[in-house]
Image 1 (cartoon, rainbow, N blue to C red):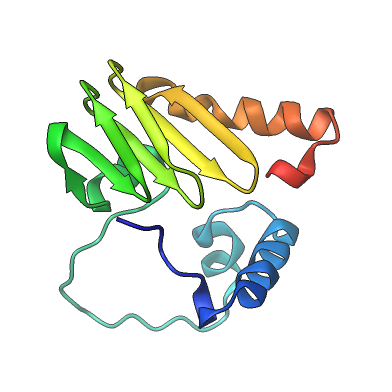
Image 2 (image 1 turned 90 degrees about the vertical axis):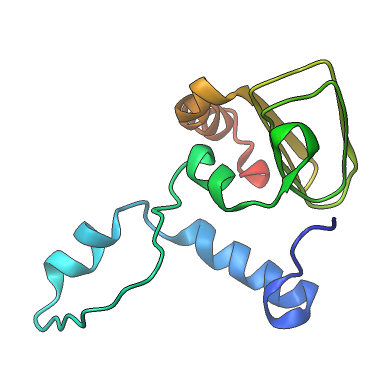
Length: 136
């Protein structure tokens, strides 16, 4: 399986989206948009919904491969179980590990225990403190 194609079908479009996203203030949709809106209309609908705000929730939407791994990208697992893997360019190979989040993107690799995924914000803070924003 390969990584998802860039939006708009080009690397340039993907780059613009990353740049603009990096400039956005980190606030919830409820606070940033809904609470400030003068006119809001609601349309009843029935559809599947998942608030994709964590690696655990992303795990629920990624395709499953053998041994219960949720994978997007190139992955080889040997005795590797319960992984969430996102690989944009590089092959991720895992041997005899379980319950991890592994993300490869733009020259950076994140590996963390799934039950500590909320602590990724500490990595983000450390990268900012070290002026390593290019990895965000």
